[in-house]
Length: 266
Image 1 (spheres, helix red, strand yellow):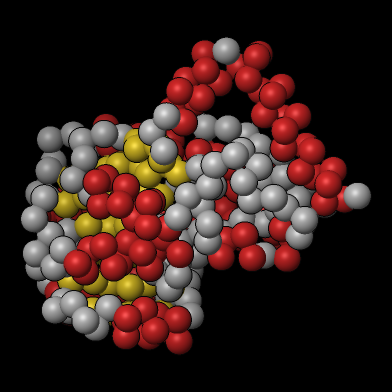
Image 2 (image 1 turned 90 degrees about the vertical axis):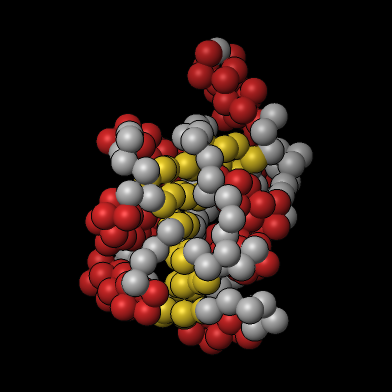
């Protein structure tokens, strides 16, 4: 796809995957709407991208608040008169057993990670359909296919995102609007800076990715007919084994990640 003068909305754009994706799109000449809660971080990203000859709109917005999302969408259309690509990337995780997490801990993850995706999609979908073109990229996780001890509530948000995306993709058949999910394994971002991750080993699976690697997958996804792009691609083999032979794979996953919880609690 030629991204020149395309309008790309990226949530969670103030750091990590969102920031890296913004730079990749800017390099390709896309105009950007950078969305996050922290104004000073967004301004820094905008400054870093000033070397590219693209238009940038920063929007301070908490995607878990549907009213703020509506205002952000209105501002985007008012500024650019269109949207071509929506990247639903905003999200966070709180680590811990379900028994120790508060209801508020669990609800807050669902509100941002899943309902934030719903609010943004609902706000921009009418414009995409009117144009008969565009793409929605939802950044999920390999946790959308594996229920993992310690992040059960986070996995639930990503299971929900994947299921929603699959249903929506079917609904949008022949409309010119596409939907693709990017599901990376562990990524080295500030996602793991939350205090709940004390004593957590990031590369428990033996694999961790850079934000730039996932950003490249987002670029690919924004012009893909596929439902899901797993990063790295060979992890899809593990997903297939888990879905085909759950009685073999689930005990291995459970044992490996319970050790993480035991280490944190020791």
